[in-house]
Image 1 (cartoon, rainbow, N blue to C red):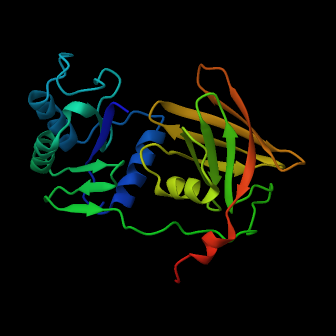
Image 2: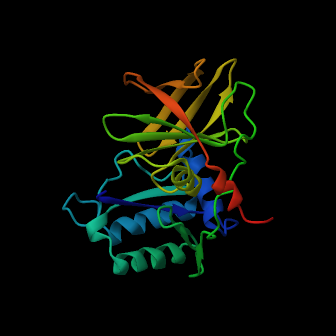
Image 3: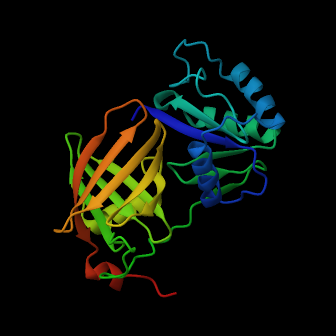
Length: 256
């Protein structure tokens, strides 16, 4: 990974990384373009004076031709090798002057506009019980669906609140480790929602490179056949095998 993505938020009521992540999810899932808030627009003008978008290779990995501020959120994609602690502090000071937060989704840190830092609570995932509930179409919640692709191992997790999480990794993971990464919802996890069907589901994932429509159907052997398609691209079809959560993971679940 050569880039570092940060989000600037005009959201005074947001005080936790979890709240910031929910705002970013809504921002990435928007199909409409909303006018930026006055504070965000004023920040953006000053930002380009401090970190010019002049294609000179200074600090930006991705410019702003197609990534203008909208609504109350602005995505900033820095060149990772050039975005050091000094530039982070400069960004925080600039955002603070305009009463804006800065959110680092990969680290799970929300830099509040008053100079404080809020970090993601270090809690284990809320493990589902092995052999636990399924949705009415038969999708399992107590583990992950995995598929091998040319790029690595693809993992999909369905939650009983209608959310779907997906991640592509280099090596094969056990169900427990895959669930840990998916529940963390870091910058590398694609997030979306799904609706159960007669024997499968339909849904949509939101990623940094666009939305992906999903259609899945369960086979008699328990495998899940999924078609994933980005707008203007050919569909990618994969067959996922279900890997249940091991029993010891539930035993390690913290007492409520």
